[in-house]
Image 1: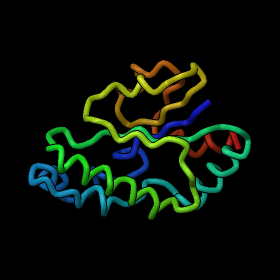
Image 2 (image 1 turned 120 degrees about the vertical axis):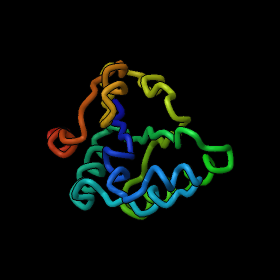
Image 3 (image 1 turned 45 degrees about the horizontal axis):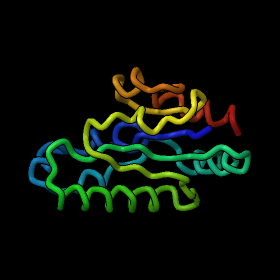
Amino acid sequence: MTIYFDMDGTIANFYGVDGWLDYLEASDPTPYEVAEPLLNFSYMARLLNKIQKNGIEIGIISWLSKSGTEEFDMEVERVKSEWLYKHLPSVHWDEIHIVKYGYGKFNFATSEDDILFDDEETNRTDWTGIAKTPDEILATLKALA
């Protein structure tokens, strides 16, 4: 079993960054850098570490910008990885997938027990495992810890 998290709008308040779309249209990764966590990450990190000790893997599946160049995509991938390390430094992700915008996240599901937390309804609908909304993260993790 693997638990996957989307980033933007799920664990990172990307859409709460003023002017986020203007930044992206200018190929500026600032919103990815400055987005605040949407959850209590101290508590979440403790739960994730317990879950991993119980043999459950954890991962990230996050999209790149919709209209990014190859150079911008590489920058966004770097910034997102740094954001994870900055905000969840004690978490050692088993998988991190930063993929082209619109790529089917269901492609990463390997078991019907895999869980995806995502704010995007289409991603949850297409997921072949268990799909949940961001507001279910902490309760689900607590139940698995």
